[in-house]
Amino acid sequence: MKKIGFYISILLLCNAVQAQDTQFSQYFSASLFLNPAFAGVYNDPSLHMNHKRQAQGVDMINELTQVSFIFPVKPGGSHERSMGGIGIMAYNERSGINGVFQNSAAFLTYAHNFKFGLLSSDILTLAVQAGYENRSLNFSSLAWGSQYNPFFGFDDTLPIPVTEFDNQKGTVIVNAGLMYYYNPNRNYLLYTFSAFSGFSATNVNRPNKSFSVDNKSTEPMLLKYNGGVEAKFNKMYVTPSLLFLYLRGNVQFNAGMNFAYSPNQDRYRSRGSQLLFGAWYRFKDSYIFMGGVKFSSMAIRVSYDMNGKLFIGDRGVDISQPAFEISIQYHISKNTGYRKISNPLF
Image (cartoon, rainbow, N blue to C red; front, side, top):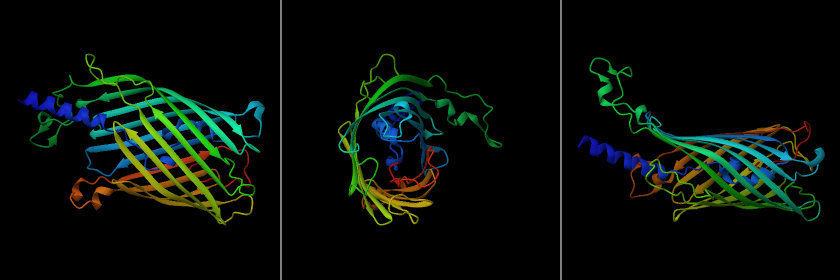
């Protein structure tokens, strides 16, 4: 019976793993994680870091971390808008008791821009992203009853009773993205607003991610749409945005508003720090609040993800899983003086 119960728990855990597909609350700051086409939008080299962790028990872990670097491709060192970009991204996800499930991956991205309009007021970016993902189940990281000493409690020097279920699987993954951007330089002397709209598909090659050699589990494509508009009101920049995801017949919809206030902004550019804040809603799931600051070439944001189940009458408070997230962005630019205003997406 013990073995039967253990097998059942493994099956339940594997099903939970298949249902993960975690997304960042600050999706707008994790560009390559959201859409590989963002590698062509940046005009300066930039570094992006995100870390999200749910506020659960001490032993229960659910966290996601990503680091990415984007390098624009400019022929002959031109100061004009880049013809595309190269991106490198790596992420790590841990979940379950003591992080029994771990998912690590590294990706290389290339994006190419097609420019249209006066002064390249419109760009269309196509991108492909390929990488290697490693999934692992490590039941030996759990604390077992046979490892408890009646005198002082848990003793990690005692042998682990179950190791035969530890497993890992490596998979090649291909993603693709498309992005249209109007007024990418945010020139509000010639244009009244800027706007962006993009589609992306994860697992385009439909990889087999099953841990079992005898079974095949073809991963479905995760489809994403992201879009937004930025408008300028004196020293305030307002950016309503949305994110739509479709996976396995399930739909997730995120919508909200980001603000950037620049106290030292003049007619053309701004110096000094910017105050960043915003709020958005993940429909039928969560309310998210964000605050941060941007100074020189660095932006730091912190957000709190209130699980929406707290507001559903037929659910208990004890099942809520609020999350904290921090993001850091750093742009490498030779221009150390006046800088263009940057909206919360970049």
